[in-house]
Image: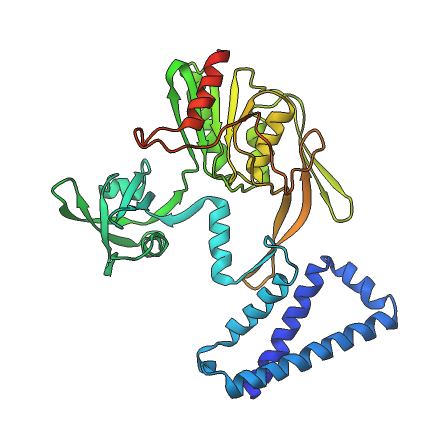
Length: 402
């Protein structure tokens, strides 16, 4: 029981610190204002702490006495559970506590860089096999001889079998400079090959592009990470150098990402004026503006669907408000709020909602989304499984304006 009492004291203190962060006391001076504002506030706070500590002790005793698997639960698990549960009570799905492992993963995902081999993979829906979909140029995977279409059946001593894609990826990722053995089947003969890749720092490929017929450029953005701006700029300039006459930007299924990144990309397209503005709980506003130096004056279409969210909606909303392009597809997700990652100083982080954002016209799209100018739902065509009626519509719109 002494072990649990020690845990209760430490975990409760941590939970109370989290409370101060969540209710908005983000600065030490703010916290001190509350403490010294009157004995009444101090007394109420002390009573709340005592009541919470007493209840946690009772719960701890019950777990220790009755819970069947109590020996399998660590102090760290219980502490993380308190923090996560505390934030869940806010009812905001976007305010989340990240433990140390989750913090590393979220920082990696937002940076767009990781230590691995540089290959995208997918699970074949018919066979259940893990198939290499893309091998990044000049990546460790390419240098090892991995090819798109290879079927991965073993990583080091791990047999892929029925493992899900995320688990297989976790085997492949690792410390920079270390080796990983990739066992693959190649070609119709399913020739077995063993390839050795040396892990390195790889940029996630968040942008794909190609020139369509009639010199219509196409750029697909999967998410807005820190690496996305440079990738978009390279794609955009390459298409321009090839004589691009119009552009389709595809944001379908893009969940969003870094606000600064989407703003920087929009500065390559928009006229002079506001791109997006945010307002926090105190009414403080922040404006992101464009000087119009690179205004795009060719036909433009932006593809969106019901899974285009957050930064994707900032993009679509700005293009629509300035009437520089047609929004094509389905009404977007409707996430018009901003989250910030706050470092808790012990290898963990808190993501919390800090502001609401508004399009250049001052419109909030939260829980409403961006309604397309041309609404068209995706329809699967059995006779043409690779066909994309939404993209075809966007290309048609551009071609009519060229």
